[in-house]
Image (tube, rainbow, N blue to C red; front, side, top):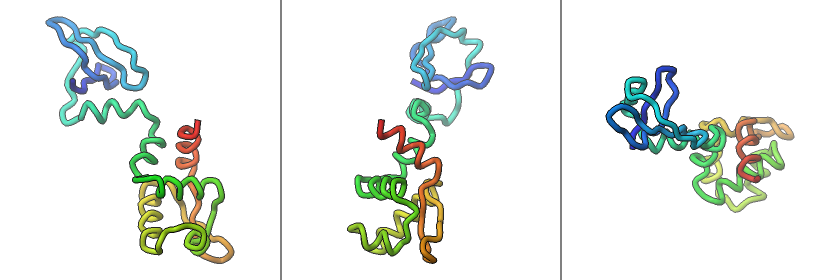
Length: 140
């Protein structure tokens, strides 16, 4: 399997190729159709698995990539439900040491899932719209 695109730039997964046409699958919908080979070109360097992953909304892919385990996902859920929370509140409420907490907060900020906030005059964090959107999808 490989990634191809049509004349409009739409990417597909090449399922089967014959002499005149190819069976392609739209990664977002799963719909398959035949397209003339002349209308397709290979996308060099595009992993078919990465192309298949585009079926999952961007925000959800970001959370899945950034939350490495249940604890990190739980931290993001708590910030979405209860945030904004100060760093001190997070340290007092959850079983994370300071270095682990700051590591996770940094990863989530870099991924665009958290934003800095001031809570009771202290540094804190709150979930972004991207995080809230992704968690809503994951919860359904």
